[in-house]
Image (cartoon, rainbow, N blue to C red):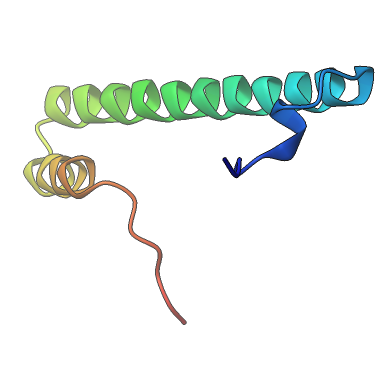
Length: 72
């Protein structure tokens, strides 16, 4: 059986360090994603309170579509 990540199979100290680094990177990515979403929701609330229809619709559409990279 071929593993995609061979360092998961090897019980050495090096493999444990790599596994911890990957785990910490994933936790950091989820934290930044959570902060991004709460920031977007707060922007949406402030646009709604300011009665800015255009800004509210723009933020809702961005939130629904998710992240889409732009090409130059």
